[in-house]
Length: 403
Image 1 (tube, rainbow, N blue to C red):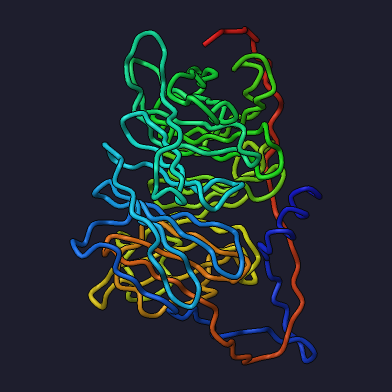
Image 2 (image 1 turned 45 degrees about the vertical axis):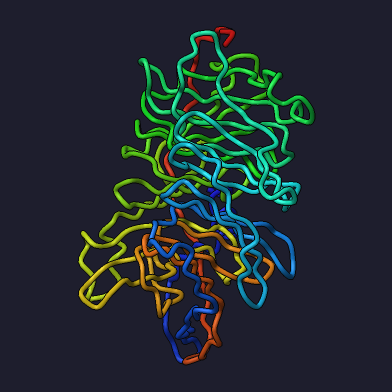
C-alpha cells in the first residue's frame, strides 16, 4: 500500500476527502489551454497520424507522419518553420521518433517491416535501414517500435503472422558504416503475445526494461538482460481489452489506453489496475455522447500541474478537446481547449515550454499553451488513498531458444 500511495503522490492522482468546515474550503479554477499556433500541414487534407518532438530549448523540433506516407518536420519557436519533407516511405507509417541523442536524426517505422533513420542535415537522406533479414525472407509487418534511451537498441512489434507475433531487436550501434552490408538484427521474442503487438515502451531510466502491449489484452514487461524470452518475461498484466498505447509512470507503474477508449493505471506487481476509467467516464459535458468520446494519450508529466489524459468528443457543435486529471476517483476537466477543429490522433508535450502539440484528421498541427488561471476560492486539504490487488509470482519453465 505504501508503494502505491507514493506512486500516486508522484503522479498527483488525488483522492480528495473534501471535508468542509468554517476553516477549509476548496480550490476551484477555471483553466484553459489557448491555441498558440495552427498550421495546415497538407493542402490535400491528409490525416496526420503521429507526432514526435525533441527536448531542445528554447526552439524544438516536431516530426509528423501523414496518411500519404510522407513525414514533415518543423522547427518550433514563435512560429512554425518547415525544415524538411521526407518522401522515402513505401508503406503506411506506424511510428515516428526523433533520436534520443540528436535532433537531426529521425526514425520512421512502416508497415512493410522497415525502420529507417534519416539525417535532417543531409536533406533527409536515409542513413540506416533496419529490417528482418532471417532466412525465410518473409516480411513481418510492423505495428509499433521504440528506441532505448541510450540509443543502443531498437525494438519493433509486428502483426500476428504465421501463428506468431514478434518483438524484433536491432543493434543501432552497428550502423555507422556500410549499413546495408550489415545484419544488425539481434533476434526476437515470439511466445509472449498471441496477437498484434500494438505498442512498445522502453523504460526511461532502466535501459534494458521494455514494456509491450497487444490486441491480445496483455501488457508484458521484459528484462532484456536475461538469456531467453521465458526468463526475460518479468510481468504479464491482463487488461481484458485490446491495448492501444502504453507508457511508464514511474519505476514500476504503467499507464495504458485501450481500443475501447478506456484508461488503466497499473503497478507491475498488481493483479488488477489500481485505477481504471471506462469510456463512459470521459463524458464530462451534457453535450457529449459516450459513443462520440475518445482517448488520445496520457501524459505523465507534471509540467501542466498534474498528469492528464487528453481526450476528445464530437457533437453537433464541433470537435471538443480537453485535458482530464484524476480527482476523487473520477476524471475531471483540468484544462479546456477552445478552438480545436479536428478529431485528434496523437499528441506530444514539450516539457520545457509547456507546449502541447496535437495533430489529427483535419491535417492541422495545433500548439497549445497554458492560459492565465482564475482563483475562485481558497485552498483545502487533500488525502491520498488507493487500493490494489496482490498477485503471487509465477513459476515458469525456463528454456533458451535462439532466434
